[in-house]
Image (tube, rainbow, N blue to C red; front, side, top):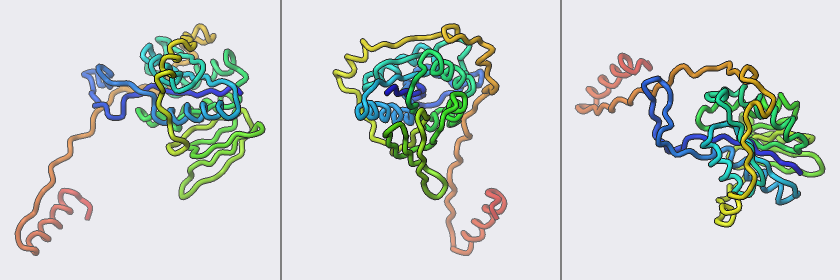
Length: 259
């Protein structure tokens, strides 16, 4: 089997967010990691290979730093990796990312059996790339998957829905986006880390894929970001019960405006 895992490099979930003077989020001094939901996707891809044989190809769109995330996935057990790195993709929106990934997977890496992705990236929470990629590749898709079995050219996926779950059967090739609980993600072993240094990692530009800057022009622009206002300190009401109740009601009416 040829198994693909799509990942994104994101801020460490414990990183302190700093907004620069230009209204943009600064990545200076920030630890970058593999998007946590994408780790479930990579783990499921590796488990599928271990069960059915084949190879795992990890792909991402990003800058030079994204090679670190790909090497981490190779250390987990993936076989090959691709980084699509181009100045025209800096600040790319979900559409641009899906266009680039679809071009890579339909041309250079055609013939895959299944694609695993995370359900969303923790930095923007857009959850758009999996669905757009599936649409561009004309694939069946299951989102927010918590259990998956692949047998005889079909995938049986259980996914979260409002108030419960549902089970879908998809004919391969298909795209599965992973939710927390799909599996337990392994840590790279020392031998795995050493082997990852020798595994193929190819960096591609848009030109290598036959795309132009116009093909990946973003339709969404982040104009500015700002941190939420600091929470006000709580008030402690003292006095007799009748006085405290009257003051509380007044605050709820005049300040909180909830009654």
